[in-house]
Length: 266
Image 1: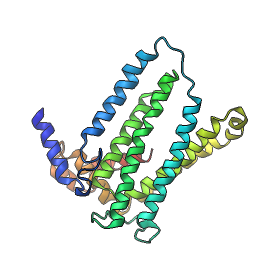
Image 2: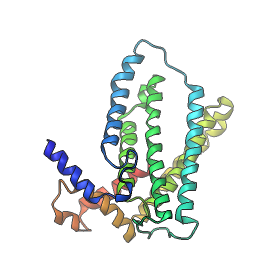
Image 3: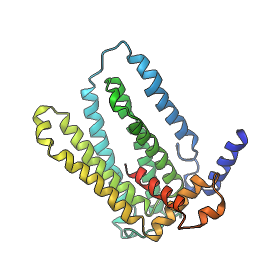
């Protein structure tokens, strides 16, 4: 078992973006694994035991501050990424390769990816809030998978493809989350706001679906496939022959590339 883990570590290290070496949480996959293990242990074991004989917490004030925090932080990430090459005209939508240089803008954009990764860690609190409020029906397998997988995906993006096409995912994902958390915050203000917001809920869903569509369209560009192939090669190499990864028309690779991108957009 130790030799297998060692092989995987060496393989990943040989393909990582050397610029993140020594960076907090993203220079190794162990912090991410440990965070997810703590997350799963907390929501499935520790917190249910803690809440067993307790009344549900309301957490109204905490949730308001949490939503405001998410709105501000997502806006900060959008601004950070846009000012790290986009508004300067360095990038074009749909055909931008990752700049692995140590230029100020390339490093700035990579740091924006690290901030996005940190933000995904804070989003794990949403499940904790559900458990503390005893809204256990909300803690579905899909919900837990969503938060776990987006954290893992953001780790892989930051460590291997921190720039170029992936920045489109980070920017638009953050914009969609600004809309989502604004909706949640306004809904938390009470019935006076909840009724007017009812008509906006399906529109918000349409925005999310439209984002998936835009992502799928961008995936057909050569540079998009280059970056998704890099991610999928890291994920599949220990389990797939080299010739499988070399074939662009291989259905398995295509499926994994598409799935990884959709997961990162959620």
